[in-house]
Image (cartoon, rainbow, N blue to C red; front, side):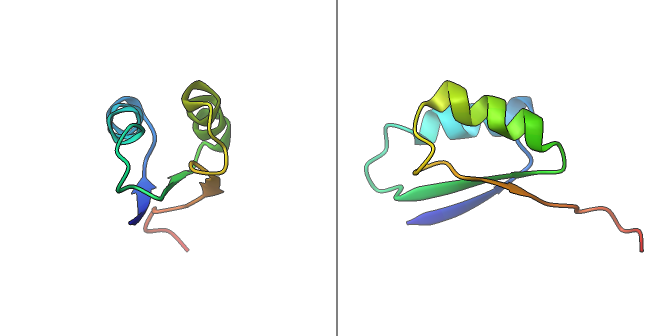
Length: 62
């Protein structure tokens, strides 16, 4: 299964950590407005291919 995780703050990081050992989870994209934060979580998880980082702007402006 492929997953898009929108928001990689405290809760998002915990979700990613819980998902990491699950064999059914093929890939989880860490999407956040703060790409630096997503990259930090990616580094903690230690598997950049399984946890790629993407920018996302979920605001309701413009």
